[in-house]
Amino acid sequence: MELSALFLSLRQGRLGLMVLSVAISGLLGFWLIPDVPAVMFVSRTGFWFVLGAFVIFGHALWRSFRAEILAWRWREMDGVSWVVIGLGGAVLLVHETFGFKIVMDEIMLLGASMSMHFDKTAVVPMRGHDIQGAFVLLDGMMDKRPLFFPFLVSLLHDLTGYRPANAFVLNGALAFGFLALVNHVGRLLAGRVAGWLGVALFAGLPLLAHNATGGGFELLNLVMILATLLLGARWIERRDEVALTAFCFSAILLAQVRYESVIYLLPVAGMVLWVWWQERRLILPWPVLVAPLLMIHYPLQHRIFDLRASSWELFGQPGATQPFSPAFIADNLTHAVGFFFGKATDQPNSLVLSALGFIAVPFFVLTLLKWAKTLPREQPVTVATTFFAVGFAAQFVLLMCYFWGKFDDPVIRRLSLPTHLGMVLAILAVLPQLANAVVTRALLAVAVIALICLGVPSMAAHAYSQEYLPGRETAWRRAFMAEQPRRDYLMIDNDSILWIAHQVSATPAVQARQRRDAIIFHLRNRTFADIFVFQRFNIDADTGKKTLRKDDDLGPEFTLEPVREERLQTLTLTRISRVKSVTNGPVAVSGPDPIDHPVAKDPAEMDRQRRAYLENFFKQLP
Image (cartoon, rainbow, N blue to C red; front, side):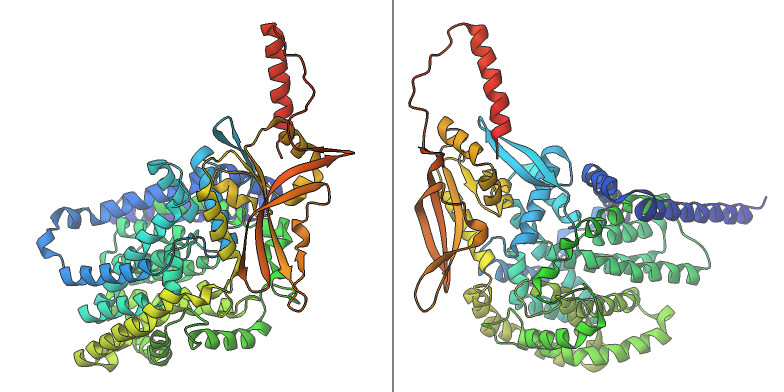
């Protein structure tokens, strides 16, 4: 058999294996495994699936860039560009306070990283207690949020010890990494000054600073989108197995950052097929053959939306009955315009970026049509940008069809970040078509002036974040934690995951009401140094009367002593109280039983009593 025929046969065999791999992962991911076992399977194996993809990705990056890394000399470094990146990153980080900004997402991600660190399971801890100085996770649930961000945070925990602040460390590093990627793609598209322009535009975006100092996955999402685009350009340039492996596994990890980021698998697949067509041959390395098998957990995790209808959070918008519909587009577009061009006190936007982006997008569409006609002769980064433009457009349309796709909503603003990235890429892509070097430098000057005169004051005031009460309450709780000399107290709070993620024993108010006997047990035995309760009161504007939020009410059996309270928002009072006593029938229990019981002297009897007490103790943990 001729060598060319043998090569063709081998390639055809690999294609068959690829089809088989896709078929197996599809059957297992969508049909063969029932919902409940599927979620349990992901909770126990999700960490290992992500680890496998991450190791293959890292190895492929090293193989692809090894020669360039070893040949690199620091004298070849563009010092000015790195100074621009450093200054831009510093602006993003110094004006905002590090903290959890979008509470439910970020605390759930932190909780998942905690479980990944302690026992390598992909669950959010729901019960955890300080037991004789050791914090033990007792129970958890599988969350709907993708796993790549908590996986990376868990690696930081593994390397430096468990600290909730590791989420902020990761995002702070990603902020600089993202600006470096923006600079690089701008340089490839339109030259060195264009790279600086991209950095200046993003450094002046308060929304980016808000997320760079938070604990969410938005920065990682932006980094992975740009990294995948650039690795796609490298694949188009190199057209070898190592470049394809790095490109494909970057896309796999990108799909596991945010729910909607799976959309970018479409342009990735398009770029792979386009190169195959251009080359008239299949390039299928072995890691890419097994890639679909490393994505089995992704559709299995999405079964949560079938098991728990509340996962769609339709309750967040009154009257919503379905998550996606074209009927939402008109209203969402109105809110999007309101966000992009709203006042700096109301929205964390950048008027310069928005204006330039809205002007550039129509010209970018014309540029894409021009590129499409000569795509085989265009630069690799141009081809990659062309394909990814489809991904940006598809994501924007999807969000406009989303029932909660209002970009001016405090919870939803962050979803506009990929759209901001698409607009910046549009600006950079049309510069060579419409402008000369003088115009590019003039735009850079405008972006820098806007950063200093608009962006920095907005970030420093961060008035746009004050209306989001859960974020302020979370910061207030964390300040309370920092003030406590000991961590061996119990907090009764409906947002118990926050306390557990900070290694503080916690239980929801509903659990405390239902298990009043357990609270009495711990009061009597002084299990915890203190028992606190977090509550929120609504204040009547006319009478000043305070009304306790229904879910926070422990009932008349609990006697509370206010410890700390503050009005974090108009007409709202936030309070932490100490549980002084709990009524048990006619008796109010506040401490140990006053009756003097005899203590066993026989060691065997003492050991029996100790085992019996510990058994009851674990049963009584709320």
